[in-house]
Structures are given as C-alpha cells and as structure tokens.
Amino acid sequence: MENILDLITLEVQNEHDLEHDLEHKKNFSNPKIYTANGDLSKRWYVYYSFRNPETGKLQRMKNIYGKANSFKTKEERLSALSLYRRRLLKFLKEGYNPYVNNTEFHKNKLAKQNKTQSNHSLKEETKPLVKNLVKESVPTTEPTPQEERMSLKEAFDFSLKIKQNQISQRSLQDYTYASEAFIKWLKTNHPEIKTIDQFTKKIALKFLNSILLKSSPRNRNNYRLNLSSLLQTMEDNEIISSNPMKKIPPLKSIPQKNKAYNFEELEKIFTHLEKEDPILLFFIKFFAYTCSRPIEVCRLKIKDFDLTNNTIRFKAKNSPLKTKIIPKILLDELPDLSKLNPEHYLFTPKKIGGTWEAAEKNRSNYFSKQFNTLIKKHFNLDENQTLYSFRHTIITKLYRGLIKESSPFAAKSALMQITGHSTMTALEKYLRNIDAALPNDYSNLLK
Image 1 (cartoon, rainbow, N blue to C red):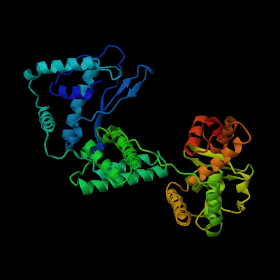
Image 2: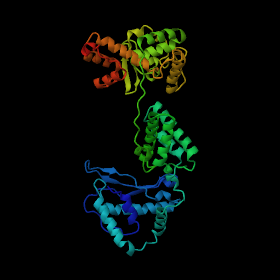
Image 3: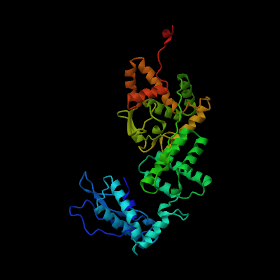
Image 4: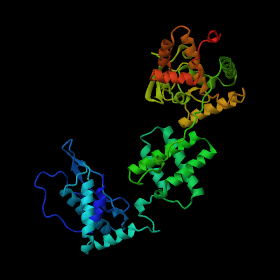
C-alpha cells in the first residue's frame, strides 16, 4: 500500500484546490495542523480522522510529518504543513481511502504529475518550500534536522524510559547494560557515529561479531534481542525509519546444560554447608525443595507466606503470581515468622528475615558467589555443576521416587503439580534434559 505522503509531496508543485465537496456524508474529518503551541523543539504535523468501515466511526489516522520539521522558523514550518494539509484534503475528496489498497490511485497521480510537471510553474507561495525540498532530496554533508538526528544516548534513554513500565526491573537492567555497552563500543570503534540515524545494519553486525568473538553465540543473541527491542521502540515512535537489528537473524547456540549432582555429592555439600554457611544451605534447600528458581526465592518477603495453608506466592518466570506449597521438610526448618516485619526479605546475607538494600539481581548474585567460594572451589566441581543444578538433582530424586510406586504417566502427572510445568510435553523434555528418566536394565535384550 502506497504512502499518501508521496502523493502530497508531489502535488505540492501543483496548486489546484477542488471547487466542489462531497455531496454525501463525509468519510473523513478536515485535516488540521498541530503546532505544539509554537515550540520548535517538538514535532509539528498534520492529523486527520477517517471513517472506519467496520465501526462506522471516525478513527484517528497516522500523523503526517513530511519535511516540515526540518525548517527552523515557525513561518516556514507552518507554510509546509499548510501545503500538506491542502494536498491531503484534496486527495481525500478525490477518493483516497487509507483502509484500502491505493496503488491505482497512486499510479494515476504519478502519471498525471509526470505529464503536467513541465507545463506548470510554481506559485510564489510554494517557491521557498520546493527549493528546500529539492535541496534536501540531494545527498549532502549537512546535518539532518534536529528532530531527526537524536543522539545515540538520547535515543536509547528515550526507549528505556518507555520500557520501564512495560518490563521487569531485571529486563530493564539487561537493556540498560546492553545499550551502554553498545554506545561505549561505538565511541571506541566508530567515533564518527554520533546520532541514531547513522546506526546501520552493517554497524550492528560489527558490534554483534565483537561480542561473539569475546564470549558465545548465546551472549551475542542476548545482546541482539535486547538492543532490537529498544530499537523497535524507536521505530514505533518514528525516531528511526527501521530497526536494523530486526534484519539480523540469531545464531544457533548450544545452551549450557546444568549438570545434576549425584546423591552422594549432595549429601557431602549439605554436610559442609551446615558448618560453613547455614543460610546458604537453607536457601538452596528452599528453592530446590519447592522446585523454584534462585531468583524467585530472592524475591520472597515475609508477607508472601501463608502458614495457615502452608503456601507461598511469588512472581515466577512464566507467571506474574505463582502459588506453591511449602513441604513439611522446609516447614520444620523455617523459623517463627509471625513476629517479623512483613516487608522484610526471607533471605539476607546475615539472617532469615531482614532488610536488604540491594537490587534483585545483586541479591541473587550474592548467593551465586557464596556457592562458588564455599562449594565449587572446595569440592572442585565440574563447570556445569551450578547453583541451579540443585533443583535438577531434587527433581530427579522426586521422579525416581515416584516411578517406583506408580506408572511413568502417573509419576509425571504427580511431578507436574510439584514442578509447575504447564504441559506434560514440557515436563518430559525437562526430564530428558537432566537425564532424570532412565530406562530399566536391558541386558536381557542383548543376550
């Protein structure tokens, strides 16, 4: 579908207003000009409404900016928008409809324009505008208008501000880190790039390749995803014409596999932590026995506990509010929470139940560092044996215990309620990934 702005720009050279109006009920409102109360730092535009064929009501259409915001004075900007407004009104009266395909309408206008262009002279009113439009259509080294050459930092800050009420704090931190890393890389490797409109697919590829060479395909894909989301916000708000990251496909990567502990290792680790760090031990037991994630347990506050029903409620990865039971094995170790402040976190570095002035990610990182220091180095663990591996170990233990007393389907059905997987397929895939579901001895089949 063609852009009506192309038609308006061409018709600026021919000042011919229609001398008649539609005899039936109008399908559109008269186009108007928004001048931002004369503020030249803001974008001016023409706006109008068109009757939605489904609802029968007038509906606001996309704003028309054109080249108007390139002019530095109110008079020039208003003159440009006045011409756009008149051209738009003319096309609407001639039958332009934004709800249908206007290819033929566009072709007819182009043909008419090409035929009559050499025979028409510009009126005095249009000369300054046409002169500037022609000048801007030729590539030059002059800077683009201020509105269209927002600095890199300004553009990313704008997107982050828009995103802050749409995504989690953790995601916002990831987006912020990615944008800061990209801007820093540009200053070092492409200092000539100052504004967001200079950001191209080629530059995006160079940056992503630099990440890939230093880390992994997975990390490179994460940067691509985070930056693409911010750039898409810029495109949606007409700060850039297109999102260059969207045109770059992700790389295939092999996800890191967290290796479960065997039950002997688990016993040794728990015995060691009873002496070295009881809080870390209870933290591990809590997220593993409830089949939660470490960061989800870091979010828990005293007020999230319902000890009447022995449940907790928290924000999960795939749910805004998740409810899980607290097994008796944890309740027996849980201290009396009734006298604690409901707003206090369950886990802190020094005690169970207290204040902790740290970001969510930093709280989770604290326990990861404690694990690396007290467990990973002490027992010389495999690099894939992580804090998260405790969850895999406990789920493996649960599944193998359940399957001894029931069929595989019944065991998985019971396990789904514990782990929180939404489908049997998802649970089965998870069990395969952690090697929890092993076959019985098949030696008799080999004889």
